[in-house]
Amino acid sequence: MPSTTANWIPWTACDARGCIQRPTERDHKYTRGVLGVVTGSRQYPGAAVLTCAAALATGLGMVRFYPDTAGAGLATLVLQRLPEVVVAPGAVHAWLLGSGIAPAGGWSLSLWLRQHQMAATRAQAAPTVLDAGALHLAGTLSGPTLITPHAGELATLLCARGVSVSHQTIAADPRHWAAQAQQTLGVTVLLKGAHTVVAGDGVCIALPPSTPWLATAGTGDVLAGMVGALVASHHGPCSVQPPLLAHLAATAAWLHAQAAQGASGGAPLTASGLIAAIPLALRALLYADTLAP
Image (cartoon, rainbow, N blue to C red; front, side, top):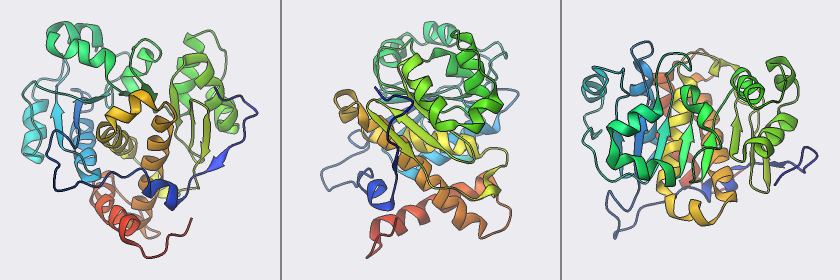
């Protein structure tokens, strides 16, 4: 368990490269990992498209999309943009829940699970990424769990668990509060912000600064999709190697920043443009002759 005085390690290109699973001639879509996705809502339908698209761009075997109970029409919207996504129930190796779903929006994971009984057991045991409207589930699932809050969301979550803190306080000292949240909640924490940090089981990671142009709608949904893809592609090791979840979260954040730099080039970017830059950032990482930090 990390402490609030833990030694924080930087995350480099070499570290990130070691967390990318390249397919071999023996792989197929199921061995490469299937990500179950419950994201988007009537209020924020675009999040469903952005999370699924980002996961596909990061690389995995399949994205299996489940619209939430209030998300009528989301599956159609996702398929119109991404025909590769599967909307039929089936095998899932990891889950991404909550992006684009407001905490007070009436969405209930317990109700969703009751309506999808085949998924219920898997959702409890499989590695799970919790974002936005699903953050309140932190610490309640039996499988490895990663949360991806920003400072405001983490403040709300900690206050609900009896730790009184403001989002300004968290933003001023993200390392301390990410480690504190990891101890309090018992989950891996990817705390998003100007200085993104990851606190996991025995490991604390500080990411290099990213472009301020990332401060635009939808980029957090993109990051959630990227994390979900990496977790799905490493679902087996995640269950037996606790620090790996933090390493995957840091790799997703590192790639997110690299893709943003490529999409921006010093100018404004959009979440859709960021997704288009993910394969380019991956190619540069995997095939660079010399990797600089």
